[in-house]
Amino acid sequence: MNQNRTKKQTFFYTLSLLWICCFFSTNCLATAKNPPNIVLIVSDDQGYKDLGCFGSQEVITPHLDCLAKEGARLTNFYVTWPACTPSRGSLLTGRYPQRNGIYDMIRNEAPDYGHKYRPEEYEVTFERIGGMDVREKLLPQLLKASGYVSGIYGKWDLGVHKRFLPLARGFDDFYGFTNTGIDYFTHERYGVPSMFRNNELTEEDKGEYCTYLFQRDAVRFLKENHQKPFFLYLPFNAPHGASSLDPRIRGGAQAPEKYKKMYPHLKDSLVTKKKTGRYEFRENFKGPVIAQGVSASKRRLEYAASITCMDAAIGEVLDLLDKYKVADNTIVVFFSDNGGGGGSDNSPLKGKKGMMFEGGIRVPCIVRYPKKIKAGTVNEGLLTSLELVPTFLKEAGIALPEEIVFDGYDMLPTLMEQGESPRKEMYWQRRADKAARVGNWKWVESAKGNGLFNLSQDVGEKHDLSKTHPEKLKEMKAYFANWKKEMAEAEPRGPFRDF
Image 1: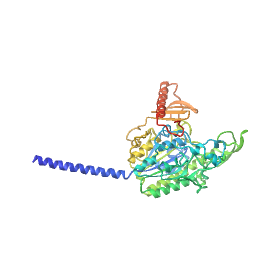
Image 2: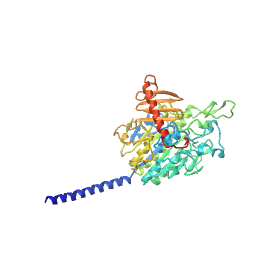
Image 3: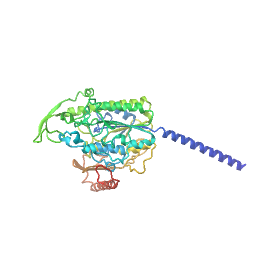
Image 4: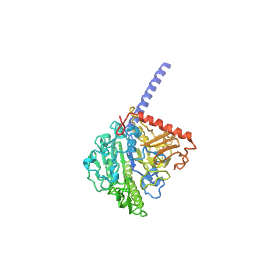
């Protein structure tokens, strides 16, 4: 009798185990078949305060403000470099610029002094031939393991040759420009046509405002792909300065009249000024000349209006997510590629684009993921753009490739308020300029200034504590030296490193 009962118990126990295994296998399979969509939106040179939800009383951003209300506002979010190219390389690889090889700009400097390249001359410049090492694995390549379709509409900035272009790096569709900046209407960089449709140069839309064009193709992408897992990368050039040889244009961003009229307190005026150096083009080299340039008011006007236009474009993308009923299963991330440049407001931070102070590397960031992030939250944890790739891959059900060293962490537990950020330190280097953050301590050594700061008490980096805390200064420099050693020992990547 006892023996029969034991057999029966064993039978039902085994049956129960099989049912449980089947249940969880089915659910795991269902989860794997329904990974979240990803919409990654990046603005260009936007100031820390230049969003309504980050404190601006001037810049009009209703759609991004709404996004913040529906998700999390990250107030302690950093990028890996204080200017364009290396920052963008890191957010797509999850690796420090010094590890992935793009640790400086891919650009030509001769146009800064008014030089216009001839086509045959431009073809052999670094801006034309430089690019991210082809051994690097970018986010869209890694997402293919879960069946994602990926599109990019806007600024690429990681190389122009076909082996460097988005279609060779995992993207399925591309419309945008390949270098650091363009005239918003002609789509030229210092007179050089720069807009691409996939792998080919195109002037099909010349004369049309580029934000409208990126919006148009992003909308098309969503209409065509909303029924499958998708990665939409929308890197706007707004509010970056226009890359035009004309100093009356180059001095600021560019915006449509419709949006400039929303800022009647700002004057759309030019000023007469002396042109004396780089970025202020010389008509001769014997001395300064007089020319028209952009006034401070006009610079702010074009800058703010370009952001509001971008915000409207983002609004249409967000509306489509609602229309197709995929918003709840979509991670939307917005941030600026680096600190604000001309016309921006980085307060309460010190510094701006190009600097190692907070104003150059700490940026506004918003993340919405209704499934996991509580609406209306503010997260003050130390987080960076290096966290994006590991976070996205984890949610997509893709294991991090063991052969790749990632420098970021899954940040969702932090945004879900399940614990502190796993990141305790962060490092930056731009040529001879250096910076390190460990805990709340920040050390800067640069051409624009030096210092040791306690950010928990001094986010504006006003009080240098180097003399009162010499041991902490020594400790910070040691941390930085260890990081430099790790980067030097990493498998070398081009295009700058000698190997």
